[in-house]
Image (cartoon, rainbow, N blue to C red; front, top):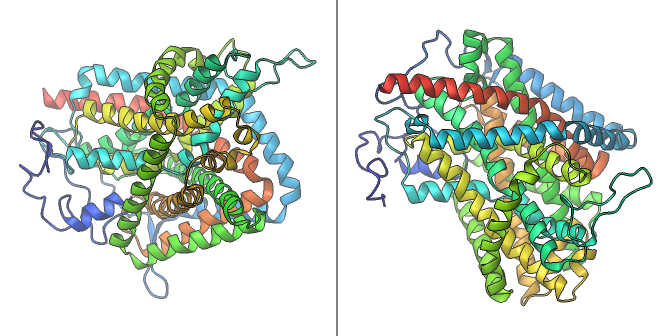
Length: 580
């Protein structure tokens, strides 16, 4: 059903909507909802109306190596070869030299976050300011796909897909653990070591002994990590991909974004390096999330059924879930995966509603607005990269988060770009910044706020539990603990499956030189690699290894995103000239 108030917002006015492989065809929309490509997809639609289409002699796939005899494949020779060999090399090294690499990963993460926290924080601020500036500027009137393009999805459907993009393993893992961690550290206050430096993990100056102050600061510090900044990162990547693909006619890969800077050199080694970095960032960002999911799922199984949460159980879980994701890739059952995604979103909503109703309802509802206010008041101090003493919070939380979000940005950004054709830049940025951010605030307020209320009521189990167990400890104090805890485990596992499945598609698209319908064996390869990387890093150093790799790949990709900011502005200015 279309939005009657949006002249570009529904089924009207698009003569191609019912053609196979085009938005509007049910098979296409089912696949896009799953973050997957339809089995028979037409090329990226041509721009509609006057746009600055970039004329180039490059043809998608001209640098590819293909084979169709014993095993079908079609890969970009430099990007696939270097990416695959490097990732396999890291995986084998992590498996062979586990004992030696554990301290290495810990030291690498500490050095990167300790020395580059200022860089990540400044970069995050630039992404937010760019998005806000484009919303307010005349460039916001540029329409993705051309001045005459109509949205591929209704407004309601588009919001639903942005909601889906905002849900994942991270919200399940950190929904309780992060607000509780910041509350506990804020309430405990500042502690100084012998070297005169702070040893606590409290954000800013903490709120020693002040229950309300610690609650307020803890929620503001959490929302800072799940609000405007991360979604600005995703918005920059999605906007860049959408603009240079739908308006400029270039392939849907990161190298296309740099045409204003590099020209036809993007088809050579400068472009190869950009796409290789995108593959690295995505695969290690996914591996980090899969590791978190495996750790939380096994902890939940131990909490609920007494199954020991060991490295072996995590390895077995990753193998089983990767096999399920691989089966969905091989079978191509779009409807089955779509239904699984819909069930998962429904379960997440029911779990949220359950905690909201049986938990401290009024505290949650009033806390939502109070937390937004606290976030607005603290966002500038939390965004300040200099002159602060809360090193553990800035280095251990913020720097890691920004690198993790950035490493996920090619994956989520490509999904958002594909479903946003036909929207103006202003509509796009307002929706991408606000819709998922508000959902994240509601989720964190409901789960984290309930946990804090229980702690203030005298229950210490949540504070004493490990990060991966805090959710289940909170649910243990509510009715139907067994059912809700089992639902929590199912949510983590299914998010694990859909992330692996969709992630293999995005990585394969980049490694296939922009081909969006490459042979299935390639997706199987990347799906397998994602699981192996997660297993190898978990065995080599646990979460510290996963976090270290996310940060190490997020750093160079941050530089790429800063360049993309300049390219976006140049591309939009050219579009405005065409409109006039």
